[in-house]
Image 1 (cartoon, rainbow, N blue to C red):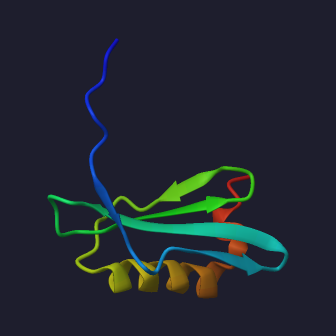
Image 2: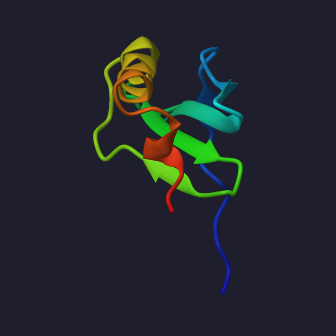
Length: 81
């Protein structure tokens, strides 16, 4: 099976690693070059990924959504156990 080229992504400057309570999370905020909306994914240190179903109008909105969940639920929200 052959696949075409991967879509070109723009990575937000807000992408980063966050450590809280000894747990490291990778925050990925990206969009397709051809789109305006941003997607949000958080990957924990075990490789489990949490991806938001909704798209965000700005990368700052995506980051705010991550920060809100982290503040309300803590890193447990991203442990996927």
